[in-house]
Amino acid sequence: PPLYAKRYRLAVETLTKYDIKSVIDFGCAECHFVKHLSSVSCLEAIALVDINKELLVSKQKTIAPELRHFIFKRKNPLHVSLLAGSAEETDSRVSHFEGVTMIELIEHLYPDVLQKVTHNVFDNIKPRLCLVTTPNSEFNVLFKNADPNKFRHWDHKFEWNRAEFKSWCEEICRRYNYIVEYTGVGLLPDKETHHLGYCSQAAVFCLNHQRVFSQSLSNEHFSLCYELIAEADY
Ligand code: SAM
Image (cartoon, rainbow, N blue to C red):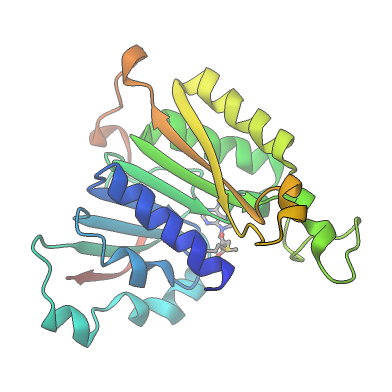
């Protein structure tokens, strides 16, 4: 399967493993992930959030159930909402959600925005589980015509090596009381390239329940700052 499908599979497996009932997917872009998420049986609510409202409006039909969803009905109902807004802020409709995914989002953010997003996710929402994926720059040498001065995509603001990603993750754990595990997707079968790591690196953050210092803020603390584009029920 292509790399994006492997990232979705990792996210689906992680949400299933931790029995997550509600998830916010920040930076949902074309909403492709919803096709995979809608078959996760433990989920009851999915919020797809992206700052690009025009894109969401043009892709809103993507969230509608397909024929297979009518034939193979879910045991528990699932509500999907598509919301235009920034991961820098929290809307009261999602502030209590248990899980957050940020798939290939952080490398699109300037440092000041990334800092706000990090604070919003780990201090305001405080999800039980958060999955983050981002390119591993060490892998780039394997690309055809590799240019060390170029990123994989024109809109990337940075691409981190494993040490840089780890230091960002560890700072989150220290500040916001999380435990992290590193993983990734896109390892090549050729063992000689394994020292470079995964093509997409990933971190799975779990709230450290052993040492919870502060309670999550209640929904009333947040306003309706996202714009609802579409909704669907499965
Ligand atoms: N997660 C998508 C997937 O797996 O198909 C890909 C994400 S795409 C590479 C990055 C997305 O992040 C873009 O759609 C962009 O509009 C969105 N984005 C950028 N800044 C954002 C922000 N502050 N809050 C929410 N989304 C943002």
